[in-house]
Image 1: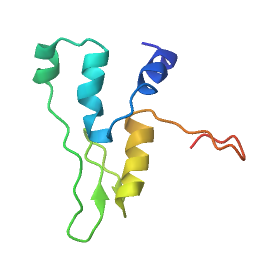
Image 2: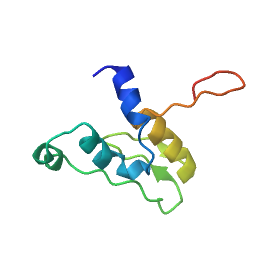
Image 3: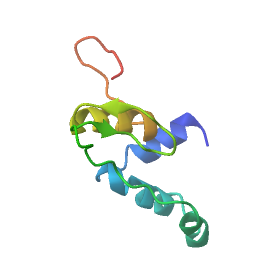
Length: 91
């Protein structure tokens, strides 16, 4: 699958980050027995000091708030990108 094909699939998703994996299996028509054989993803909960650890399949990044983690998760793991209208940077 090309990055362009992946981007077109991701752009159709409007749900919560933690529901993306289930949605994408269906969107890509992955057989249920294959999808169920993979470990499920559990979104992070705050640590006792309030930090959010990204535990997405070996990712070890730490964030001070849930918004920081969500920005990271959406960009790094789901491929969501936003273009800044002021400077045309990809965020």
